[in-house]
Amino acid sequence: MMRRISLALQGGGAHGAFTWGVLDRLLEEPDIEVAAISGTSAGALNAAALKAGLIEGGNAGARASLARLWSDVAEVGDMRLVPWMKAFLPYATAMADFTASALPISIAGIAAQFVTPYAWGAAYENPLRPVVERLDFSKVCNTDGPQIAIGATNVRTGRIRIFAGQEVTPEALLASACLPTVFQAVQIGGEHYWDGGFTGNPALFPLYEPGLPDDVVLVSINPFDRSGLPMTPLEIEDRVSEISFNAALLGELRAIAFVRRLIGRGQVEPGQMKDVRLHLISDETLMQELSAGSKLIAGPRLIERLHQAGRQAAGRFVSGHGDKIGVEASFDVEKLFR
Image 1 (cartoon, rainbow, N blue to C red):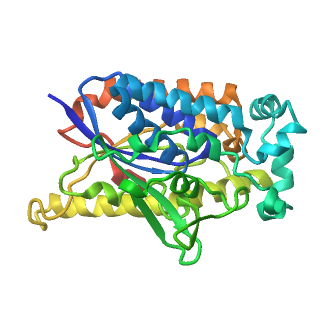
Image 2: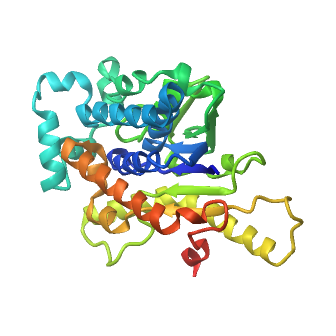
């Protein structure tokens, strides 16, 4: 019997390699079927690569597609460096890999505090564009396979925009991953968009459609909790970023907890509201060791470390909670608000 799930994939730059590891391990389970995916930023890229691979070659094709995606991301290195700059910095990727393992900063990161991405003018190139455009969008947008919902933030209104179906274009993925201090805003249909993490990291509501499974597996790469008080400028900046990018998600999780309480008390007619069975795959210990700056430094060593950690976390979930899929929630969302 197939265990049908929906996936909710957080964004977090290079830390999205953790999600790659999670998906890589889940795809080894032949009886787990992914019915829908909601993704933001790196989660959006993972979602598109997963869908394209599934259409091309089933679970094995999806694993190969995700591996290609992160090999391409690793070649980008420091995402703050536009492609033409690498002609002058031929060892940029190696420098980024060293920086990610040894220092929580990059030279380009310091420059980003003083220079807007619009300062490059016509010379600006989004370093993620070649990565995104290598995906086969005839498969990403295929009506078969899992539904995909990609979140981005409308700069003018401050509201979330969900791209789905044929709307999932290279521009939509770039918009979802557009950190405003690093990348120029992405224009789609006369509107400009920034990173979807500001308004939904990821958005859960697209997964509430009646035909989709009640089981939602959230792959979290932004720590909910931090021990100790941030005191240095970098620590404060990192924690502010985490809080900002978790705010919308926490709001949706609170709503899930509220609905489950209503259903449990018999105050809602059966089937009237989605009774979400939530599951969580994360590694808070590892993510607390990594700085926010490392999200923009996609060095091969960091990516491989995160990939292996994601596989291990998914393995723990499968062995410890896999039999709960279709039966009961394995994550007590109420504990987040106690």
